[in-house]
Image (cartoon, rainbow, N blue to C red; front, side, top):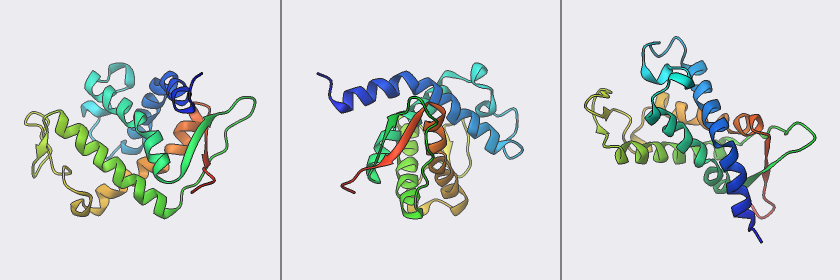
Length: 166
């Protein structure tokens, strides 16, 4: 018999690529006009470098942990449209900190380090700092990513719900 966790992981696994593509397309949409079009991260999914695709996949993989941290879970929805949940400001802050930590870990594992300016050739980035040292405009990027979680899961026919023991 499969445990609930295994079943959820299998379901999310089948939706992983859909979620990763959706995360990427939302990034492109939100950064149009802010990030140069020739930035490799702005490429359409089909032309996106594999390391950047994997970054989006890792962000998708972390969704269950973020939801668990704020007393939520998700389930597939059949026969109706999934409902969209709204997170509280406190929940958004908790998950945004988690997202920044996840992103830091991903970058450090790939050989990046702190640098005053972003330099992909040297693998340096000014946002590779603790949350408390992250500028507000960069914190808002993480909050934005978290605010989009319900929409992302809805696109893959999942619905977020609150656990009763929160």
